Length: 210
Ligand code: PRP
Image (tube, rainbow, N blue to C red; front, side, top):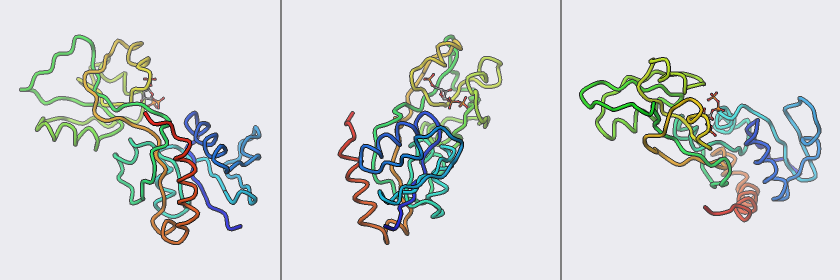
């Protein structure tokens, strides 16, 4: 059988995503072995999996290196890749939030300094409120920025809230809920439509609503 290629996000989310694909009837025994390989296939089930950096999954799918993939809604909103979003898998649920030091009081007459990994999401959010901001684009450990006075607030992902709590920050506003989405390459969607929709239906039947 012609194999469907799937870009999976490496890491904690990826383990859960693979478990969901397996339960949906797309197992791949070799991926479950302890090793550092990045590509795995099971011709019997008709799938080939790649482990990619979570923020890159949409790029592989957009450019057709993978037929389908799984990416967080945060990545889809930030980079707006030219792909179809087929299903919400309900995994990796978290929210994009504004957070700041507990004693932070916003002053509307000042430009707000916003540190984030998601400049487009942050920019759109504040533009919708006609608020002038200065974006400080960081790549990780965003929570440090307000502590060191680099920014007034951060726009970042909050899952359990532990990272904020342990750094004396608190959420000030929720911007958008986030979860993992099944995405498809547009050409694959057209030419491998039945296979992709079958996968989508099987995954959706296992998704808990919430
Ligand atoms: C993410 C996010 C927060 C943390 C939130 O970081 O940027 O720092 O997880 O999770 P929590 O609410 O459960 O504490 P990630 O682990 O992706 O690392 P990063 O610092 O590189 O962004």
